[in-house]
Amino acid sequence: MKKVFFLILFLALNLESVKAQTAPAFWPDIVSFKKQDESQRPPANPILFVGSSSFTRWNNLQKSFPGYPILNRGFGGSTLVDVIKYAYDIILPYQPKQVVIYCGENDLASADSISSDEAVRRFKTLFGIIRSNLPTARISYVSIKPSPSRALIQGKVKQVNKDIKRFLRKQKNSDFIDIYGAMLDKEGNMREELYVQDRLHMQPEGYTIWQSIIAPYLLK
Image 1: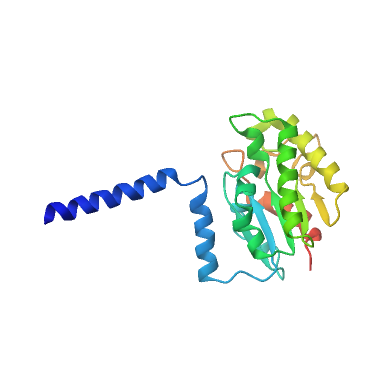
Image 2: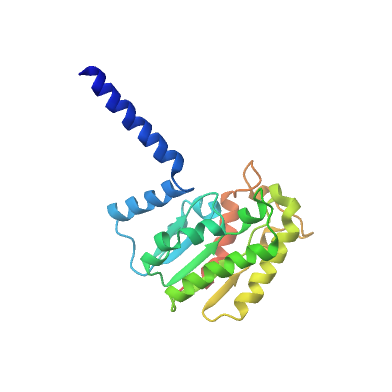
């Protein structure tokens, strides 16, 4: 009888291991969001922040914008492809009145080294999904930041920012929120003091800059 019990236990543990190995990238983050929604109802028609770790690490996001129905669904390490993949899980169900996006930096820094044109195409795909399903939502894109650890890709970063800005100028009910220049010094160099030790993620001072620039774009 004991042998049967341990055999069942062994098979169960291995099944869970297989499930963990075959789960899509970032699926645990999505499941975590769903559990949060079950335990605490998200605000109706929120201002939804989605994207990569620069939003995930903005721990006091709601306090940064008091009086606004903020909902943070950023998940660290994500690319535009990942946000596209989970748009029907973490964007559309909330029926947000505004979607604020920070994503694309990881795309450019990824191992497959995509072009700036490909990154822009990915953004346009995400924009199209949101616009077609949420025709009245405002879509606001925060420009890719100047990260010291990614100095070698700044040419592509600037091109993507430029091309997305040009695209959004032609779109109704949308914004390009430019934080790039505000994170440089008077000589146009990256400000190392705005970043933590990895020279990629930001210190509170970096988020203070973002808060002051993003705030005027948020819908009342």
